[in-house]
Image (cartoon, rainbow, N blue to C red; front, side, top):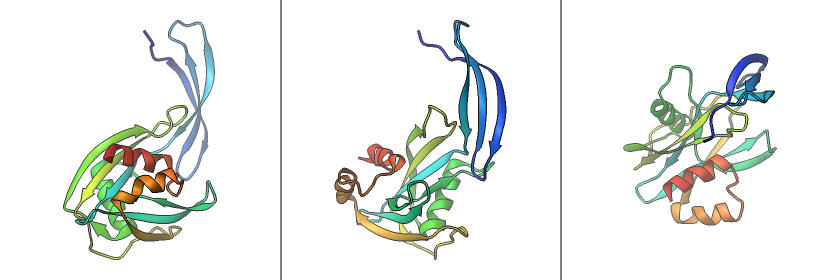
Length: 175
């Protein structure tokens, strides 16, 4: 039976604006192997699939510095320290799009990248969304809000228009 490795020590190497990079010394369950492993600590994340009454998905286009291109995604972001996931999801939806919904429920959770990241990403479905305010973006955020019919989502994933892995995972939970 597979067992967890024992953590022997953690050394902070670098603290960035949105993450902390650590070296973790761990030992195999039978004690025969010990090694240093990279670990990146992030806050947990939330993704939101906002649906209008007529089954359009409220999506966002934004430039991503990692891939250096504009992506088509669902709203989402980091859960702030001490904040509940549901509160973060509601906040992120409103801030990024100006939309709010009537009914919200958790539809799935994934480990963002369990090979070296510590965080999870929870996906919430928000139904009967309507525009209730203007966007309230962070200083560096530039987000264009678009409505996409739900029935077009699979095609946009298949043709690579939607390429963000956590967004694809979110739609897996929905569809």
